[in-house]
Amino acid sequence: MRGPLRLAAIAVLVAAAFFLVWWDQRAGAPTETAAQPPKADRQRAGPQLGSGFDFYLLSLSWSPSYCEAEGPDANHQQCGSDRPYGFVVHGLWPQFEQGFPENCATGEPDVASQTVRRFYDLMPSAGLIRHQWRKHGTCSGLDQRDYFATLRAAHDKVAVPEEFRSLDAYRTVAPGAVEDAFRRANPMLPAQGITIACDERYLREVRICLTKELAFRPCPAIDRRSCRSTAAVMPPVRGR
Image 1: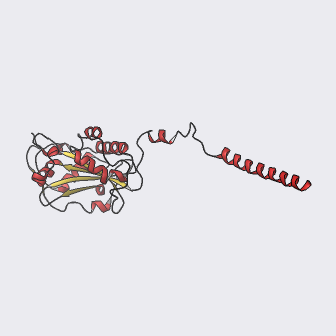
Image 2 (image 1 turned 120 degrees about the vertical axis):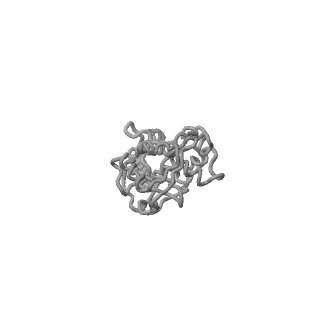
Image 3 (image 1 turned 30 degrees about the horizontal axis):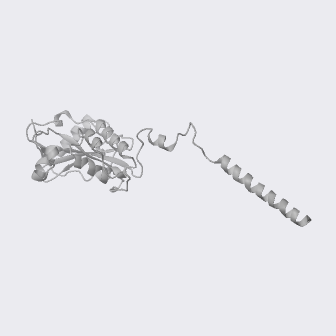
């Protein structure tokens, strides 16, 4: 009997050793504490910085130029005769130092109607809002709520010069003069942090580079793509 008893004792000791290892691992496992709230609560704590890109490009579109250039193809919600829009947000675009991401995977493929309505003061087109989320917002590393909150904060960061807040007649401008006016209105905006977009006739957009914290920053690769025309037309605001 001595042999079987000895084997049984060894088995008990081995089982006890395994139990102690398991208990030590369990005791050392990380737990949610008051200093580290549950993941769901951390996600609801407020807007977070985006990830997976280098900076933002805020694009402000001169709405009357878009409406005239697109003609009957323009969005009627934005370009109706009673839509007195000047500069509106075209988008807030995550950028790499060279190039940009787009159409990233998301668990939020659409934008709810109540969210759309909250941003009509910045982006007066439901189609534009939804398109910008799918193409650009999904690459920000933010959920939908935080992305649109960041978009509004970026818009509010930039002061539109008084002379370009609304026009009641056609105006021919030098794109460089528009850029200078924006820099005077935003003294911290560097020379390489703003670019003007135009087509063969119209001044279309003012684009401004921002850090993830929404501070002005230079973006030489984008600055090099600025409008080369010496003059561009800015049509008047509709409904005036």
